[in-house]
Image (cartoon, rainbow, N blue to C red; front, side):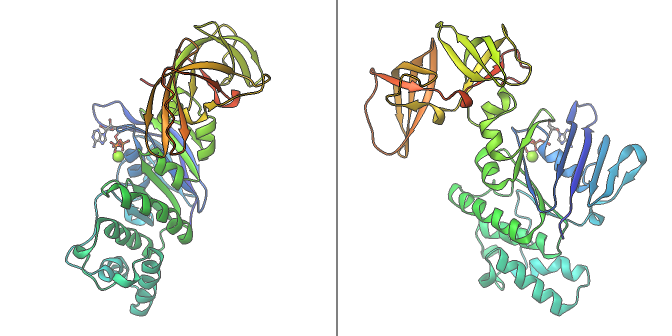
Length: 369
Ligand SMILES: Nc1ncnc2c1ncn2[C@@H]1O[C@H](COP(=O)(O)OP(=O)(O)OP(=O)(O)O)[C@@H](O)[C@H]1O
Ligand SMILES: [Mg+2]
């Protein structure tokens, strides 16, 4: 029983502060997982708390399954317990004096569900999160990752129509975090519940989300499937926050549909993708991901082919990062593979695929710092 979530022009101002959530609108389809991604303080938790009803919005409207639960201008504010939500937070919200089964069944007993039904439902959700064998163990004898699974099982046990998760993995060590990250998507999808997941970790967002909403300063900058966020970031901030280097300054020479030619300080010309509204003569910043810089011998017709000098290299085991002097500046290039080639001081041929080179307006207010 999953529901659609609709958030319309949500604004939340705390007394004396500027807007923590500043005119945010989005929809989450039934059964969809949307991840809110952004740096600390950008308003992710506040957005989630408004959806939960734990925070009173200043204005805007929130509807769950077509029912308006928050509309301050019309005096509508449905309390959290009547919104039929599951919530999982960063801290392990489990009751330490209880077993796993007692923890998960507590909300069901509270709702006066028949005993046999409770047993069936608890067995079902414990299987879903992979904790069937731990049902009778005290929760204090569990690892952090297992405790988070208990919290997740408990929030799924009463079939919420919407699941809200706020950095549920951030207290776990790196290895456990990776494992539970992969499991979480499967568990939420198997449960079929609509979910909003908050994180500042881009890798987590990409693995978990059907769509990612990138936030900054209370604003939603872009909401799109992970591959679109990675391949067509809406602005320099989104590009930078998801791993593209923010590089060379240039100027648009000519625009052709979605693409255009820019000139950089060395006088070299490049074909790049340009966001809507960026025209001839405009100053731009070229952004590209290190993993999209190609090395090798290229055919003469290859666009954006340049000779670069290798300034430094950083071997990272599974990949190597090369710092290159090219186009009158510096860019980073990543090569996958464990082999180590000493290229420092040599010249290499590189190609920058035009669809993966982006020229953002350099006076962009959202430019990364
Ligand atoms: N109860 C409050 N009173 C006043 N200001 C608040 C309150 N809660 C949050 N804020 C402010 O609202 C802004 C957004 O905070 P929020 O907790 O939503 O950020 P976040 O994106 O979840 O960050 P983090 O990644 O650090 O958890 C911040 O500037 C924060 O200081
Ligand atoms: Mg937060």
